[in-house]
Image (cartoon, rainbow, N blue to C red; front, side, top):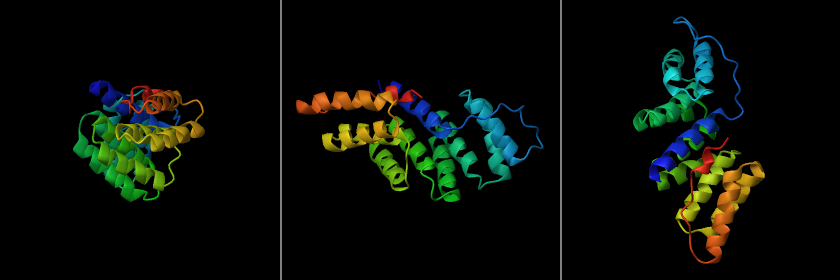
Length: 200
């Protein structure tokens, strides 16, 4: 179950970062390509969930332009997916510094930490994303799960509701809300499934 939770969170964090991003598929970037061209090539690979193919382009994009927030964000996500949490944190920290107002690096960090079962740190990152104006339903879905782990039914209900308001078609939040409602009515805090959030 823990492995499935981690895998689902990894897929969700990648989907979270690429939400609303539908890049055209460019040819592979040449060695002399610009940072923007390298980023475009990486995004094309990530649209196919291929971090290994995206990794060299992301590394070169941030070498050419260290303050390129989106490249750092995607590099951080891929690093977590490659089981390199230290590089993941470093890249997401750079994304946060490059675009301080953006909730996206905090969303990505929160979901990645959730997948590593580091709940307190995950909650802190996701709470920061909310404070920065996150409108991603997965942010609230994972906050709802964390609230249920803590036995806080009221907060979980509010978070799951918020997720479904942001995206009425986001089934994981609706499923967990119903499970939480039934369990809390009987005074039992269920363990959130956590696997359904990989749905796009």
